[in-house]
Length: 468
Length: 62
Image (cartoon, rainbow over all chains, first blue to last red; front, side):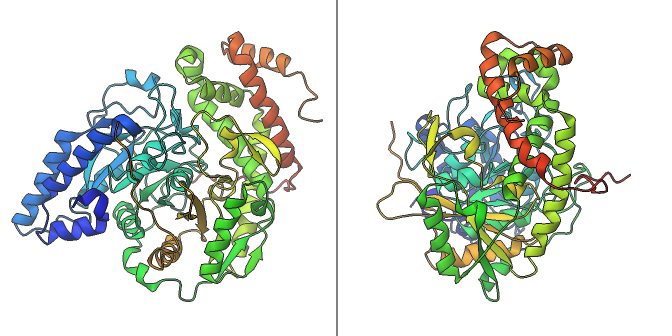
């Protein structure tokens, strides 16, 4: 038995704490699987073997001494390479950041995961500077979809999707500005949590769009998602965007299932402009959840547009100096979008932020009558790597900017979302559905996701990867 | 004004000079494409009704 492929993180932690497995044996299994599969899948950009084994030994020493190593005892995890990892340059998917000195400390969430007993095994590939939905990278190569390596992992947390779906790590951390946790979760068949904006500290991570940046976990089980999320909650003065809410644990809430939850499908904008499989997946979840009602999220198209403009402008502002001096070192696809972003009027961006206020207030009213809204996570299953266009509703569209059409209007106002993986018999690739709740109600969407998982409606199996 | 009714080449030239951004010839088609898309998308945003008093979403707390 391989703990990485045959056990969830929660099961690994329980076995380690019970003395049935050592954390060292789990870390060795994770590192061996990563060394074996990464040449095929390209999910990792750095493997921190020595650090992982040292941490695993510390977990085993805690247990031997009768100390509780934490709820994630011995669970292997890895992080998108925009998280600071002490001793590694924080690449954020770029060539330019390779010139930075190694990080002198770990990101806050890396520290919190390790404080809960988890074992860091490495840093993960991602789209350059997180401006990406594909998982492709001009410098490191594409992170590949373990369920079919000719297809995209999704971005920008592509390596996070790759590593989790391949069983190289039990849990990975990613960032989500416009969909970058939910897209790889959809394409790679995983559970992904984008918490409420401001819930998890971003201290020690390379930013993209401060107004919209979130961090969160990706996993193959809802229990792992909740355990990781619980371990990472809490205020942090080092991130001015962190809301400072107290820890509100969710793991113990999972067993409540969907009792009492009012669930509806998103209509209008969320019922157009996608492949049939996106809507079929939502219908399957709606049927399983007894969601008969459809409600309209008014102005979602304008909201998506506003998120698009804010992203262009804030992203350009972040990179303006580098665009002047290091423009040739960017991924051309990212560079051209950033330069264009520097050229759009400030008046548009402020209007977009005003729209955000009004749209937020209107959408929150919907939660007076429902607890969860269902919507597609992506308009399609994972496209082929390098694919430039796709046909949606009979119209040929560019792939890259349109993968996030359903995620952007949701993260725009910071709502918590779990993306759940839906499989169809005969299809090699999955597709995700967003479970969306009111701000600060991560517990609700985790409960529904857990119910769907335990009743077999959704699942996140380890991919059967063929070695080279 | 439609998304294609302005001279995107002139815009790129002017803004590149204004911002001190070097724009190589082979960057121009990509930048132009993104500006045209942004202009089209902005029409939805600009048509959205907000009042003079609407507070933009980010609020600074001193």
